Length: 291
Image 1 (spheres, helix red, strand yellow):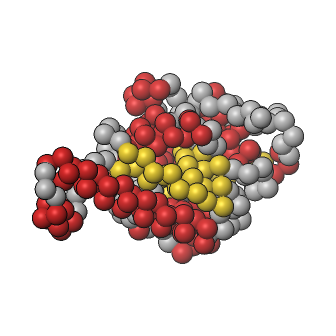
Image 2: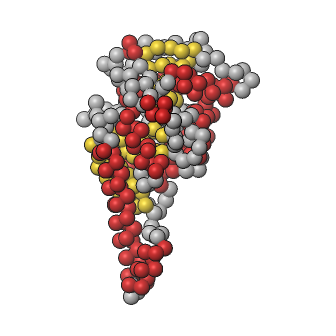
Image 3: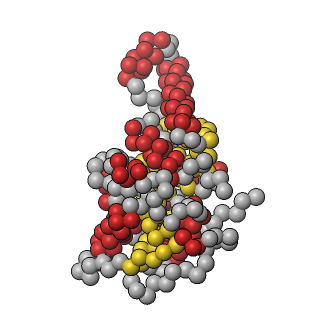
């Protein structure tokens, strides 16, 4: 199955690293390198040069818009080059918006029928800087799996990307079921570790049609009772480190805007503290039907 990935690309080192990492997780994918720009174009030196050239305010506005669009196209083309160098088939998609960039990326994913959305994060200590960022909006509002790549990563974490197992947080809920289904579909040839929160959580009897579940194994985790959600977060991350996992997959709860409140402290905790890639799967996600 060819996976279609919408990439939120802004030209930063973190965004470039996210493409390289995801290409190891999902090789041979089709990348749609999406650069969202917000007018007006903000380079101060370019503005001064255009002001000297323009004869009227309307002409200045038009020139600034033209330069902004051309710069956006250059940034997107740079992302395409990185994606192709990493082994993906890739194309560029430039979008102008006057609203939130993360919302625009989410809409693009819906419009073109993407399988997943890829975003990078900034800051030391996993993805803690994701709050309030473009990545945060995509995670909260996207109706399909979102891959968040932390930056920077250690060499050993990079080494696990090619063939390491994928750890899935499992508690028997519908959100966990969606996360498991997405994992089987995206990583059909990898070992999958279901990190079970309690002994009563049964491993699913089956998965998506045609799935081979012989590579799925169970790992019981016992979080602290005093701080249960934080304990689950720490236990999932520890399980991923012990397994030398390529990524952690967690499910979320809620629909559309309500997910901002209902995403769940465990999912957010893993997203903010993991130094390995995290895939957040919305609870309402279903396997897409391809024509």
